[in-house]
Amino acid sequence: MSRRVLKNAALLAFLWASAFQTFSLAQSPAPKEKSDAAKPAASVPPKPGSTEARIEHYLRNLYAWGPAFDVKVGPSKPSPVPDLLEVPVTVSMGGQSDTAVVYASKTGNFLIRGDLTDMSVDPFADNRTKLHIGKSPSMGPENAKITLFEFADFECPSCRQLDVILRQYLPQHPEVRLVFKHFPLVNIHPWAMTAAIASQCAYQQNPAIFWKMHDAIFDAQDVISPSNVWDKMQDLAKQEGLDTQAFTTCMSNPATEAQIKETMEEGQALTISATPTTFVNARRVVGPDKSQLDQSIAFESFPQ
Image (cartoon, rainbow, N blue to C red; front, side, top):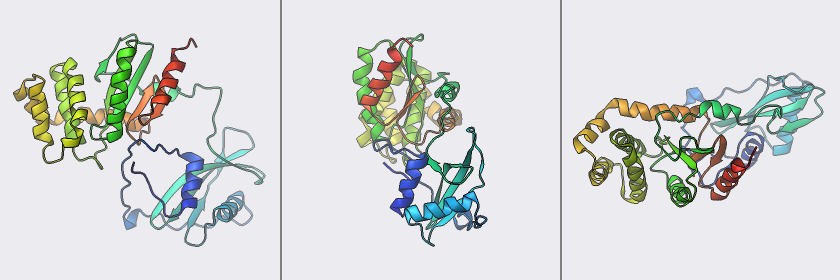
């Protein structure tokens, strides 16, 4: 797995505990190098005695953030909870930076790290508004009680692991519907977009062939490379009995890539940063985590 690496472990620990989760089996795009122009400017010290100043002093002492670390705290704003302020904290060092949100009492005596959750609302409502089957490939009953939305990348080894899990699981659970969403991590997987386009072209010719093409690409993952991916996709299309001339035309059509980018935008709206990411109805599962999939599917199967 590739993910952002900060030079100081204490910095990473703070940010992870505050706002991020680590998914060891999922693949994430490598961070882009920041240009000099993109590097954050040195922060202006907060007003002495202010809540922001107390937070900075406390965090610097807690995590041993010396002069090499630039710490920007604030500006604070009211949070949904009375008497709590929402305060962004940005920490920079060595050309890298990240931001987390903390909550502080208005007296400045207490600090809370973590997510603030409104228990009066459905925690998955926002996901539900952004998950749409649309014209994406799917298998299973249209009226399924449980729908899996899988955002995946054909070049991602972890996605292949999930594919193996689902190939065993889905035949035993015909009541579950699977929807496949393309999410190629193009900045670390050089042939993933071409494979996504090829599978989409298979789907346009014959929706049933998509799943055969899908499985064949994952099965051939170890032998596909940037230099041979075009030929490999042509070979697979021929093996599956597709019209190769129409397939080639589709592969070259910019409109096909545009369709892939549409599902990528869906994933970005859901803040997906690693593949595979699967939604069990609207519950997020990152990585090929069979136990978490089983747990989520079992829960969704219970009468609510």
